[in-house]
Length: 111
Length: 358
Image 1: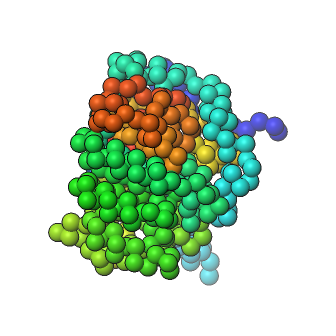
Image 2: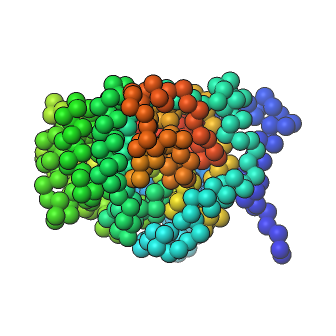
């Protein structure tokens, strides 16, 4: 298969999502901008959280966007790598903690 | 992919085509940008950019440097031998003496401290009652033959404007060379011991952070907060203020953008982030830049692209520089979008506060 579902050139087309629902798009944009503004958390911290979440939800667009954003907000590769490890640890831990459910089931059905 | 720390050398040394300013201008002019810088300024209702009386005389003492940073717009390095002659130095100081509007001397390079007359220039400019800024790469302060340089700067109340792209070593060394970060921290501690960056000492330590790649600087206030916390926590280093500076698509940063295939996208990014609120505070409005050979320019970037004013410092008339040069039209090109992107960028950092137009 030559083509892929994800294309880098599609990221700048994101605003096309406003074409058929401009009011919802506007609300999303206003909210999104407010979320990432400097607040109790700094811009760099928010960019690193977004980068980690992008890996957890495995969104290639978000990974590109928030890799650049993290650099622009002053993070370096070491911090960004640690952020990805946080996402990976939570994903890995989330799988592993379900082992308790597995064990409870086994104890229920097995002798 | 981790970018390897490339032992950079100058474009000149490698006989690279981009060692030529005209080749750089041709590359920039050939980019299919949506609009020219002049058109962007006109659309903002700011007319052609004009300079006022110079407040800052920026003396580029030459291209010699002990570092070879990946992003250097000067193409400076240890192999460069162009340094300002005594005649040009004398002409600059004479210009200073007869130009009351110029309150500050901004010494840059290369590493300006490597100029043989650096200390003499500082003493003479101080005797004329001017403020002095030294654009310092920090590692020069740790060279054995310059062991007393930091104390000299303190003695003459020179503001140290020090390059440090990041508060950690990884990104800093990738841009400035292996081991530069550790030496820079030693130099900052030395400056702190002399009183630089400390309340009440009157010794000003300004940090300059520029991006370590093909992206724009973040909000200056936010970056400064992070640097202040992290440099103190990790290294016990303090400073007075931080400036963010956008990397200019000139010389080695132009080469970097070109090599990585980012040139067109970077220029589009700068253009898309054009912020008319930066125009009033652009450094070309109140800076006069002098090259090592005495040629005059609107800024250090125009100097590297060889876009000079008509007169050289050697043949400027006998009067006040303000009278001679105020009102001149600034020479602009696509690179000027670097100074107007987002919060704007100048040798004094961001030029427009508040929200960034991204």
